[in-house]
Image (cartoon, rainbow, N blue to C red; front, side):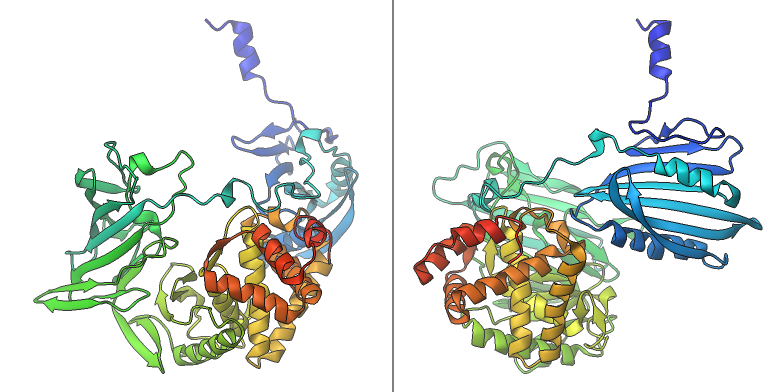
Length: 563
């Protein structure tokens, strides 16, 4: 039974874990319902302090750049039309180098102020903000300056070296489970639901057991046996398209571009959930007015009355998940290349994109003769840009097929973006990395390779620009926050050190080994296909050069030193 004393203790407000000397008119800091977000209000409501801690997906961000991002993406849009002035702030905060902003604006015809301080420690972001009247600025700045960062908010120091050498548990490939025969049936002309029938043929020695099937989220089981399951996924709720089970419905279209819609025998799913994709053969039955897009041409296609039946060839690499898309597609051809364009998509430059990609592909074939050369492009709304085996999917919101190729894109222009996609199609989709160093082998090698493709295709200005990005990003970013083989994949949408530092490390490998020798190492790996690790790369280099590469890898791949 709870006593009155216990109830009082439960009701007592939490004390802030940090120290900050608040001005007399402010109440104690109170914590928000979620996270480390603390605020203190002035008694009359005309002032507010906020201190918050967040974990960054990308470690090693610069406080200066984070503060600039907040100014441009948050404060300027909010304060537009208020006659505001924003100044960057730099200085010491809680004994650490910090950045921030000082903002003056008019609120309800009175001068108002925002003072913000930003501190980044590895993957921890601490932001302190005060908003109040102009006359309170001096006291507020003094209060912010008194902030003392608690020890619990400091991150654990990142290791100087990757002791596992890019391996770890992810280097162990999950077992293959067998072969699927997949039938996808869409009887509704409006594509409001899809029904899947999976027949499972286990590998020799694989027992599917009697535990039944693990269905994707949102699926309704219709019938099942040990080796066969049939289930339906409804894609609309009150006439609105609703993503479900790895399926993305849109107006007059449907994408199944990942493996999330597959069911699996429960007995074969390991504790960590990691499974190797099955080999499979895909058949799709759908209303005859629709087209179904796949990376490969069908081996059979027939239309009977209002039903279209499409059978695709067996895919047996056991590395990639089955994928397809349905819509009102029109096919454009440039030479041997195909562009599948949804009828409502803007694609005025699809031929130009195909020609540039084909030119880059020729450069790739000259450099890596074993690289995959068969592919097509397609559009789909809201899918995100995807690079799949033999298929490049362009999200229609990205206007890839309607914008000029010289138009600026992330860290380059559209042409550079196409080179990156083709490079990743070889190093990342065809040759797949495993282990904790996978992002270095995939993303960093694809970035280096994109530079080689631009250089080899005669796009010298684009090649120079991508190299300039590497150097500029490194100059702005400071020390590498952790070894390349321990950088999270989220770095690609944050600091992008896997692109800049990673590509420069590949340039250093090229200098140390010689371009021709490195090309031979990569060509043999591409020819073999499958997966590899950073230790496989190190051993390949040692065999080719007859010397140890461990010191180089410990310093620049498994360590944090710049080459």
